[in-house]
Image (cartoon, rainbow, N blue to C red; front, side, top):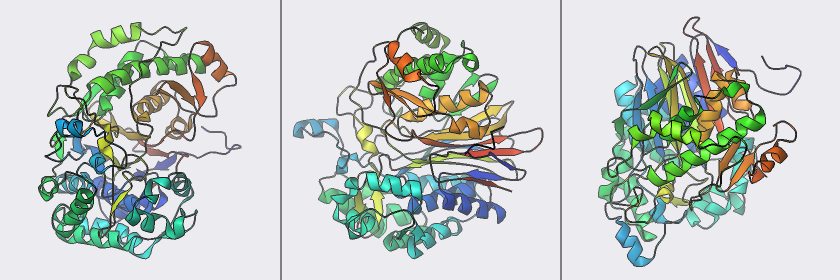
Length: 525
């Protein structure tokens, strides 16, 4: 139990249903759907659609989506890969011949957005309400306006340069030439019209017709290879989730092309250690060393498994994790292998548990803040830049290729025990997400923290040649880590965000937490 004499959030307690998102309007939309008889999938879609309007620099129609769904009575969750593919003409040789790399604001960073198709598939297979009903709140906010929340305003201001160079984006997101302050009213009427078209026509209203033409023409005018056929071919895919057992629980993640495999690899490495008994120094050091090893393998091997061979079984084998753990020296940091990877990025994550016990873990992203910075002017759709995760390196598993998915950082998680859902969970923050899952789960399962305490705990992340530390760790930790050889630096801002709902199967109590680093909240009844 937290100290009520100090600032902080209490974990939400509910008996029927609960939601947790990173934006209050998204949480409100979800809880209203649940109270109106909708299920967890319905609520999740309503929430993420709202968030794509009111937190436009993090997510939206122009992004991708992954989900884990645990229907009541299902022993294993279902995993949906709702990420989009590159254009059919995107051969790596084409880029090499022209000396092109995939830059963050380039049209070549835009793969076909997969989110809308993913929402439709989730509803068709597990929802109970029409998409048109669930898009009404998002349409209203886009049409009538919404008030910018403080964390959204903070991120908007520090990333304004991303949209300043695109006329349509600048007009939409920088009214008067500046980012809106907290409390400012913003709207996107053209996006409202696009949402209304999707409500009437389903995903065809996005992937075909005038909206698709607007996106394709916008990208091709900038040199993109996209065609209407590429957009019309968008299709999410149900895939088999991957899993490992940790402290008596089954941890489920989406398989590659996502980075959920990295979570399981790190958890396997930590199994021999009493993580809960470690000091801050030893725990952060161990996490850093495990993270560096696993992320090196991620960057070298993770890719679209349809078009590349990813050795999932080997990387989850006992032989691999015993060898990897044995290579860690608890007294000294190992020299990291640096790959020329992109920087931190952001997204939105949410989870829902409904009255029947259905659980949904969903994550939706335009990758870097404001994505590519390219807005299709007639439809008001801001396009993501997930394609910067591709390499232009023939022979590499993650080299760009025709109709290929890049390696993805966004990963929903699901904790199960004895064939029943225990907790949908997720952590935002681009590359940090895999490490974030590990920090969250070890907080819950090793350190005995409740869901809110586990989210509130200070975070560390060893990536890109440094070890970042948030404020809040024990005094002297940075110096002690530096003495072990870590290049320590303060985190430049909050590391990620997260949500989790814990299901007590014995009592029926739902305990939900939402990260203080964001504007959102957990709600329930």
